Length: 209
Image (tube, rainbow, N blue to C red; front, side, top):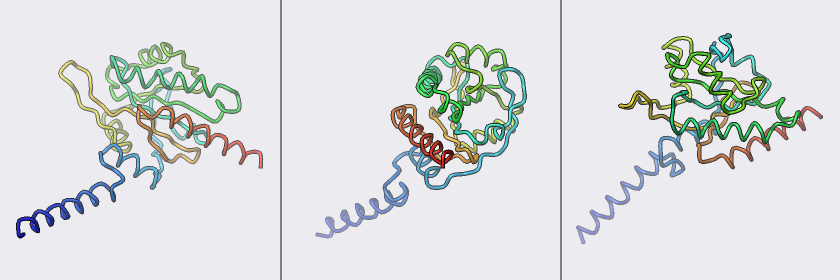
C-alpha cells in the first residue's frame, strides 16, 4: 500500500511539473512555446538597419503598414532554406493579385552575413523568381546586430561540421503596426496561407469602411 501511495504521489508531482513547465499543457516543445508566447503577447520589432540584395540600407520600419512574412536563411543551405524559400515563392504567386500583394511583403534575413553578400542574396531571390518589389533578402550589418535579431526572434542557429548550420525553420509574421504577432513552422504552410488570407481580408475591409 505504501509503495502504491508513493508511486501515486510521484506521478501526481510529475504531472504537475509537466503542466507548469509546458504552459498548462499547451506547449510541449520549446518551439511550440515560442509560437504560443508570440500569439498571446505580440512584441514590437526593433527598427534594425539591414543591407539588402541591392547593397542598400533597409529598415523594417520602411514596410510598416504591410504584413511582413520573415524567414531566416543562408544561401549555401542545401535543404531547409530551399524549402522555406520555395514556400515563399508559392505564397508570392498565390497572393499576386494587386489588392493582396500591395498589403503583403516577404523578408528573408541571412544569418551568415560574412558569406551572403548582396550579390549572393540577389542570386538566391532570382532563383525563386522573387518580385523584388515585394520580396527582399537582407543581412545584418554587424555581429552584434545579428545576435540581437536572432535573440529577438528566438531563432536557434548552430554551426555544423560541414561549414553550414542547423537552425530553426519557420515564418514570422509582423503586422502593419510593426509587431511580431505569429510564428508558423515550416510544416504549417496551409495554416499560414489561411492566416494570411484572413488578416489581409480584414485589412481590406477596414480600408473600405
